[in-house]
Length: 498
Image (cartoon, rainbow, N blue to C red):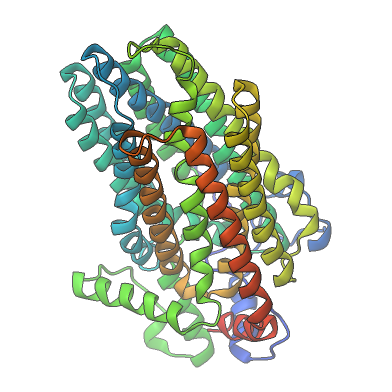
């Protein structure tokens, strides 16, 4: 792309997913805002869109994916380095605590429960691209607190750095999630775009964690943190390359102006909201979810996180099996942990790819079935972790469990995107993400306490997670069979013309 060139870009939220309605507002919204990424409509029909076609025709989506790839790889690099830092400090003191790892995981997750709804409100109020750039730059500075904690050999300082980093991430996620439909407005393309975003995240989980395990032994823990800071700067640069405006307020007001011919709304200026206004918008988002027949879908990730949330703590325990003493061989355990995370990443990549041919955005029931399959795979993976103790089998069943966890993450997100109205998407995903992180925190804490205080092994904790997965599978199966799909479809049509 030539420097300074402007690529015409969609400035709206979503193109309505149901087009049966003849509402004038619906027609106008589609006609005004549905501008294709390259300034012209694709010659391909939506039902024949391919992953390569999406990437080749939408340059803004390519910049978006590259940014996410770089940033996610850096985050996983620093995560493995954080675990290694705790193990190194505790090993030098002659004591190892699983609860310390659980606390790290909890600190990584809890800020999302507190700040993701605020991030959702910001995503619905301001230009999402600009917010993402600001948060990337802020994250690059925060990483240096990790470096300070390493040289101070302070676990408390490491926890503080994690808290700061995850607070930034909690504000970032709703903007990141809600901007995708603005960059990729076509319905069938959006499904593939979501899968690609998920694949980037999970593949970088595999690559970043594996490289982290190797770099810790080669260059040292502190340099892994420094590399993460650099990736945040590169991520900000790549987001800056995305052209167009992504302010949902401007898009919505422009639509109202065209339909009502209100001259006072034809020139929309970006304004800053007061804290009471932001709080009111957050409350409106929660009330909106409660009022919808599909509102319970924000609990799909919540219940799944109860299962996969223990995964990171269990992976640390599995990576240390066979060490035979409290003096852990850091390089060996870090490398095994990197391998385990790599298998987890592979499972996350393969899960949505395998299930995607069996789903269709026009069929809500197919997205629901994908979520049910995900719970079965999580149950199967956790059962295998209980049944077998060979490291390679632990890696394989970790991949099976992670395949299920990523399927439910992708397809629950698609359900929410399909059913929620354009003006509420940021807040919906903020609540969804906050609940998932809260649940994952509780699961991680439970995994550490059960091992340290109850004396259970990682395999025994895995069996408990398998039982939880089976119970939730049955629960959601009953819910999907009892709640009318037709009722949710009607809600979808109404939501998309708001």
